[in-house]
Every structure is written in C-alpha cells, then in structure tokens.
Image (cartoon, rainbow, N blue to C red; front, side, top):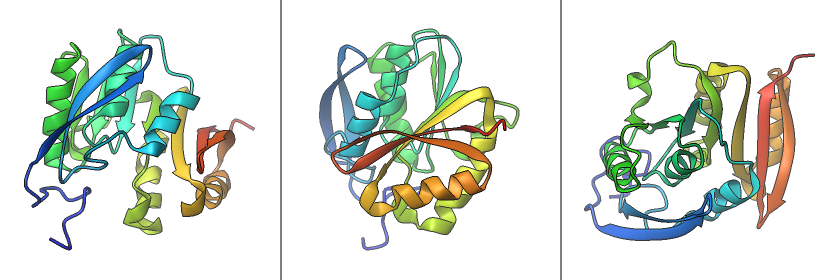
Length: 202
C-alpha cells in the first residue's frame, strides 16, 4: 500500500511479527515489533544513539515516549526508572498493542501507559519527554507535534530528541530556540544529533 505509513492510525500491512533484541539501561531487552510500525525489524539507529547518549532517568516521575512505535524507548525508560510512569504515545493502533504486550513482557504493564494523543489527560505534565520524532511527516506536522507536547513539560523538565543531521537537526534546533526553548546539542554520533530541550528561563 503506497499510502500506508508507520504513522497511519490503522496500518494495512500484514502484522508480520519479529523479535528485536538490544541492550539498554544495563539490561538485555527482547521486544516484539511488526510490519506497519516504525523500524519494524530492528532498533532504529537514531533511537539507539538516543538511548546510548542521553542520560537515562533513574527517579520516580512522569515520562513520555512521543511517537513510541513498538516501544523500545518506553521499555528502556521503564527499566531505568522503575518507579516512574511512562506514557507511550502514538497514533498507530498496532504500535500501541505492541507496547502493551512488550510492557507486560518486561514486567512494567502497570507503569507503561500506551495511548493515542487524545487519550492522554490534559492535565498531565511530563518530567521528561523522549522522542525520535517522525521527521518524514513534514515540517508543518512535525512543528505542530512539538508545539503540542513540549509545552507540557513540567517546570524544570527536559525533552530529549534525536534527529538526523541530514534531515534537519540543526534547523530544528534553531526553530525551537526561536520559540523560546533552550536547546543544547548534547551529543552527535553516526549522523545523528541528540538535543536537550528545556524552557528558556532567561
């Protein structure tokens, strides 16, 4: 299906399931992925850089994996911060089903909350937002996505984003700065930049 993307609400591709194994937060994780979901057969290289280079949370709090796919970031956050609640948000219904299954698999079903954007209560604020954002939805949609969720950072909160340099990491950093966020190019590896984004308090 040429119009069937991983950011489709109901992907038409057959749900061909695969197992994806990787090490994060000091633990070997094996998660189930599927066709019709972002990075369906592996840990995406950008996600791998993000999980390797950004400091994983350790304390209780409310965390967000924005554009969660089958849940490698959400699972890593849940393992790293065993007292935190992790919202895993995606528009893709198949992705959310996989997140639910994978959370149970790692013993975190009670702390990982798979949800569409509309299902997240409006009053929830996040201590940290983690995302390998869907750059290929285009700049207008990407900007709208970030303008929706970044204002929901709690006071003192931080967002960790990974973006390919070739797909506009530096221009995105500039756009965020223009909108009043403090952006730090925290790390670069394998063609990706890891950005930390906070509210500019100056």
